[in-house]
Length: 409
Image (cartoon, rainbow, N blue to C red; front, side, top):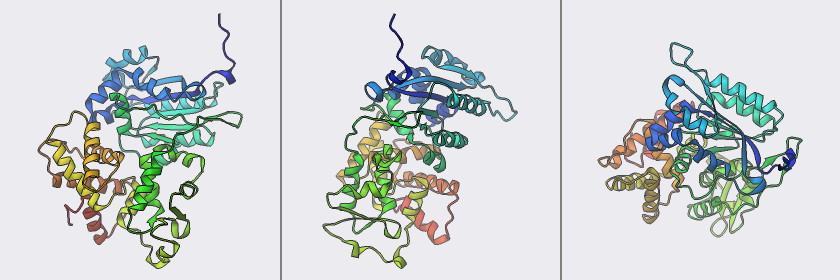
């Protein structure tokens, strides 16, 4: 009989998975019914994909796999989860309004795991429910890594508290088997206080994204906009900016003609065309509506022209009835690049996801103007939820920008 490894020698990051089945399934079903079915009927597939962070110490070992579901509605999926090694906890509705007991059961189990003897290093919460923000704060305060798997809009505070967020479109790609690489492994935290060495990381795709964005800009660019582009290209930077701790330090070391100054809130520029003397004066620093919205809501910080080209490309590609949303996003991204208005695939996915939140159906009859109007409605709702207030002039500016100029007021 093979002797068990002592805890310090067992390979892999010790992790725990807590799945709010009702929240994830309904969110996925609104975005992609096929992906929702795969989530519900083949949990082993995507759980294994999340486990495969790499070889040896950098792979994940899910010591706890819990799924919380309403047995009245979703009992037919129970067998799939138990066969995949999940512990299924029934959370029936306890109120006349249909509110289940998932939240309290999940939180109690998660806190037990945090205080337990296993030394869990990374906690996964599969839910877009911002009620779990306080739970993620507890994990973070205990110096544990946290990953949120979201199938729906994620509150800004919830997103920022987590070390990593598996966005809806990324999760859909995992479910469809179209993601080419496993989810990056997080740092491994020794529960005695140290940080275990991690694998050497490849060059972040954010480096090229930031370089192209800054070198194509008509002047110095506000740091908030550059940071948003970087995180869109590589969400894993959110944890600690590639080991540099903060955005300013990360962007300052890029080199290749990229310069950064922390003055006036932070600015980035192309040294071949500009210098620190080209930075706006304090009186001139008035963030545009796109910067304000992108900073607070995670809406892609694209220009009006980029949004317009995206809606035109979407209209054209929808006529061809693409097979999957992932394929649609890739084609639209390529079309925008060809048209001279480059946008990232993540930005296209974010917009496509937004249509689902306002119940707009992506059909082959949708026009660019209709797409623009639906997306703008989603942006306005995101701003409302974030408690952003605008005067009448700013509301007009917001609609014109988000719609790519299709809406003027």
